[in-house]
Structures are given as structure tokens and as C-alpha cells.
Length: 401
Image (cartoon, rainbow, N blue to C red; front, side, top):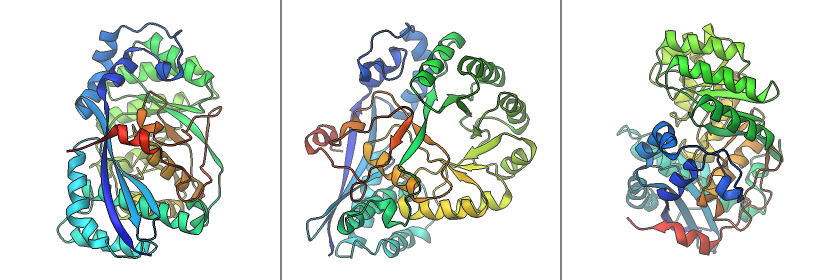
């Protein structure tokens, strides 16, 4: 069996749907067809939350799928996490990586990973867009391997630790305190085991939101705060103490990712777990942080951090340090989720699963859409990624450069 074709596919969904979705006030209201959400002023919602997504995504949400076809007709899908400038990933795949892999055996996954990584390593392009491009290809190769063997990827990897994962809702937007509390209670009532609060808007506001949300949901729901890497160490310590008092599961990205020493000192200072990792893409980067004691929970993004091959090695490395893994999942397609779920089921140190339950048409490109079930998401059990692509729905989102 040989690789015959590698196709990067840009998926785009109009941002207008997202804008309406945020203005509705409650995540998922439109998707679930409910109309009883509290009224949130659209202008205030735009001022306080939409600016982040406008800045990141401009007028649309987008990602890049990778479709690999073998000479025997097997087709595998992967995803490159490319919420901005997906054309860069497309160029890397078409001009650099695909020519390296056409004609190769798709089952030689680890060797092909090393071949791709080595192709630009000496030039310093071993992370960023390069890692995202590699991730999509690597996941598609694992999808093919699973289909060839008739097994889901997690069993092909020798796993099977979980058949479902507990979910936390990501992210609780920064609104007025009463609105945030009501929204958090709604997510708790929907069965989510945890809720991540969007932070990084100032210590006093973050602490106020932390205390209000804990009061609103009670003690049985795990809470996290994502500071988006904006604070200095003294401010992070101040906020971290509030998280300790309110029994938070972890404090995500409290400092800029470049501050290795600051993260290590923060981990020594705080009792609440310090989490980070969506900015890191290789086991070498994670090893430096783990060896320094600079992370308590690792958060690799499987469609950014070089795919299943590298993320399994990152998970093993973290397990050596007795550190849990919680995959980073943002606004992505069902392929991303399928790959993350396969990884979670394949490793012993999985913690909790990030799931954004809002209106996202990219989740509907499979024949049996993924739907939370009382706070859990089931790990697909079919061959490969365990999902089937709905070609008609996919074609509606595929765009040209």
C-alpha cells in the first residue's frame, strides 16, 4: 500500500453565525433550538467577548482538513489547527510535505513523522505552521492505519483506558457577574463536569468572577481559569491564591509562555495546579518545562502539536513526571475531536476533556455528529478515527484560497 494523494482542504464558516450565537447570550441556544435564554445586550456582549474572536478570526472561523488517499482506495482524514492564515499550512503541505510522502507506505507512521520533521529542522521551522501541517498529515495516516487494521486508533496504540471522557465547558465569556453566574449554572445543569472561565482582564475582575462562579455552581463542579498568558508573576500569585481558596482544578496560562523560570517559580509557590501547553508543539519543548517543574497539567493541541504520534510521546513524557494531560480543543471540526478522543483513550494520564458546545457547523461534517451525553463524550469505536465524513456537508464548507 502506498500514499497516492494528499489534499489539504480549507474549511470556513461565516462569522455572522458566530456573532449571532454570542449575542444570543447562552452558548448553544441556537443549536439546541431553545428560546428561553436570559437576554444579553448584543452590544455589551460584543464589547466584552466578541473582540477576542474578531481579533483572532476576522470575519470567519476556519481550519484545514487533510485528506490522504492510498493506491488501494483507503482514505484517511486529519486536521491542521489553523484558525488563522490556513493558506500557509496548505502551502507547506502541497509544496514541502506531500512531495516527501507520495509513494511511501502510509503505515510507516513514525518514520514518516521523522522524515517530515527533519525536512525543515535545520532551518528552525520545527514548530508553528510546520507543526500544524504535520499534525494534519499524521492524524490522517493513523486514520488509514486504523482502517487497514479494522481497529480504532486507541486500540491500535494499545490503549482502551476509556470509552468515554468527562467534559468541561470552554470558555465562559466575560460578561456581567450575574450573567456569568447564570450561564455557569446553566452549564452545570446540562451536566458538564467542569467550566473554564475566560480571564486575563485584570486581577480584580478575574478574582470577582472566580468567587461569583464558585458560589453559583457549588462545590461539585470543577472550575478553571484561563488567563491567556497576560500576567506578571506577582499578579499571577494574587489570582492563584483566590483560585486556591475557591478549589479550582487548574490555572491556565497565567504567564507569557516564554517565561520558563516564572512558570517554574509559580508552580513552586501555588497549591493550585498550573496548566499550559497549547503554545508548545514538540516533546522537546514539553521536556524542558517538565524537567524545570514548570507545569502541573499539560495541554497539547493534537492538531497543532504534530499529531497523534508526537502527542502520545508527550503524554508518556508527562506520565514520567506524574503529570496529567488535558487536550486543548478550541473551535475546530469533528476530525479534531475524534483525534483528541482517540488520544485520551490511548493514555493512562488523561484528566478532563475540553469541549466548546457552541454553534459550530464544523462539528456536523460527520454522519453521526458528536453530542455530549450527560457531561460525557463517547470515544468513537469504529476503525481509525471512528467517524465517517459526510461528503455533502463537508463540501459546503470547503473553500479555495
